[in-house]
Each structure stands twice: as C-alpha cells, then as structure tokens.
Image: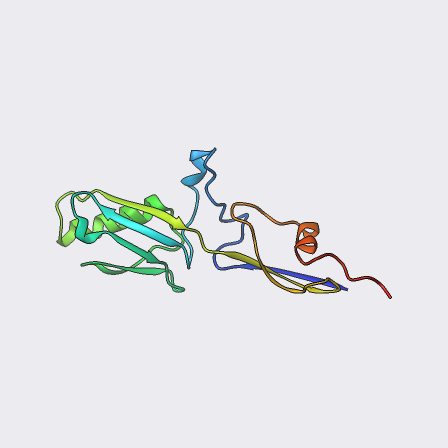
Length: 144
C-alpha cells in the first residue's frame, strides 16, 4: 500500500505558480505566501529598505507603517498597498519596489511501501508527479 499526501506552506502549485524567467507575464500572477522572503525598498529612502519573511498570518512589519498583510497579493499589489501607506502619513510620492528573494518551500509526504518514507521538498518551479515522488523516496520496497 502506498500513501502520498501533498501540502505546501502557501497555495497549491496549480493555484500559485512560481514565476518563470522565460515568461515575464507569469511573474504578475504569483501570489505571495507565508514563508516567502521578500525585499522592500523605497527609492531614495535607504533607511526603509527591509528584507523580511512573511509570517504565518500573512503579514510583514515595515519601518514606520508597521504590520501589513501581503499574503494572497501579487508583489505588485503588495507594493501598491505599501506605497499607499507610506504616502498617507510619511512620504510624498514614494516609489516602492517589492521583490521575492526566496519562495516558500513546498513539500510532500510519501508513506507506505517505499524505501525512504517521509517528507520531501519539491523542486523549485517544478511539479512532482506520483512516479517522481516514489523515485525521490527510493522506489518501492521489494515484495517478499
């Protein structure tokens, strides 16, 4: 018997594709998720530059404006939210750039008659089918 369970720190792969360098339009569809590492910078405001990991509740804390919910938004939408918050009370026409430095790890669990049952990291930007998952777990155990 073989049991395979898939889970991730963020959205499922089909719902939250990682941007593909070959397809720039795909970068606009990526939704930020918990455990993504992001860098926020404001043009001409070096003191506000922040590199931070998105918390499990989907928020990050930025200088001056505090906690901001960014999970579930595209990087562009999150930058717009941050821009509006800085413009509201602190800066005139801030130019905010938000970049994903590291994507949260997606993982799967494979149990049953495989050589090494357990939890495995999925390769970045790739999906893993059932045969690849079994291969990552060392293949089936030999029948006796």
